[in-house]
Length: 109
Image (tube, rainbow, N blue to C red; front, side, top):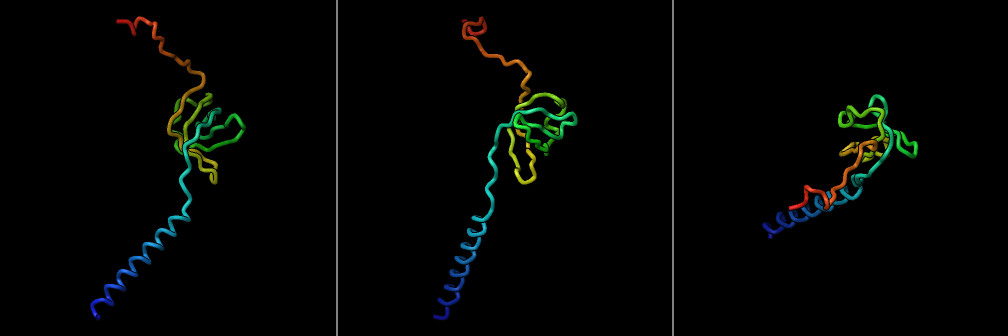
């Protein structure tokens, strides 16, 4: 009986810690999903003015370096509290888009 009591106490403590950890995970905010925002990049490259006139601060401005003052479409993770975005991918809107043509000589054999 004296051996069972410490083992039972250890099992109960482990369960209590597991439940407490799961409860704290429930209160954590889920990470924001990636969204697409289109707009104009500022002249210093640190802010993006969207087409809906929202101003977003770019947290990784080095990703957009060399494209200041241009129209861009960015795939990013927004932080609505700080009103900032972290850019994953971007495309300039003034770049021409090319599509493959199956009738082109490159596809013939």
